[in-house]
Image (cartoon, rainbow, N blue to C red; front, side):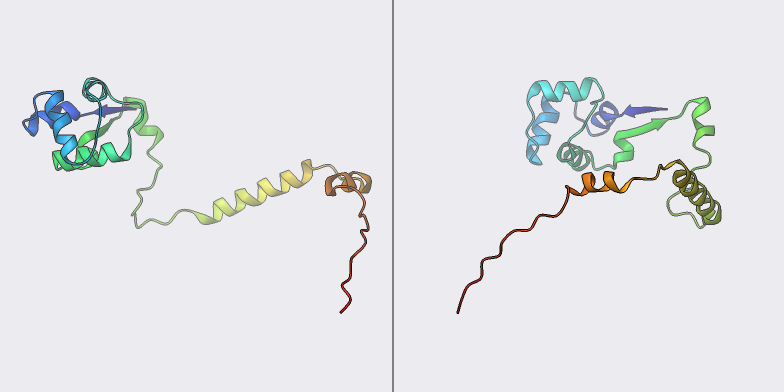
Length: 139
């Protein structure tokens, strides 16, 4: 699976033909970048993107994030995500199976635990309790 950065296509659709023009447009919407930063964004997909920059690009191009970023699936990728349910799907997940799996996990965890000695417990709680004198104020 690859993510494709479509900024050049969006620039052409909006008659922005250079990085300098894009920089001016970004400044009008309140995003201040250096020329080098704009050049990097135009020439290659950034590994990280600031949400302020993303919002500025969406305003300039009058588009959505799907227009700027698209996911390209390879042959084997579709099969690996075929069991993913869409967010707003009417289908209900199989809850009984997940509860059963959770029970199995809990029972295996309990079996793997070792019993603790009471001497070790005092080490966990900070040792034996200490008595401190209490100052009383006489009225």
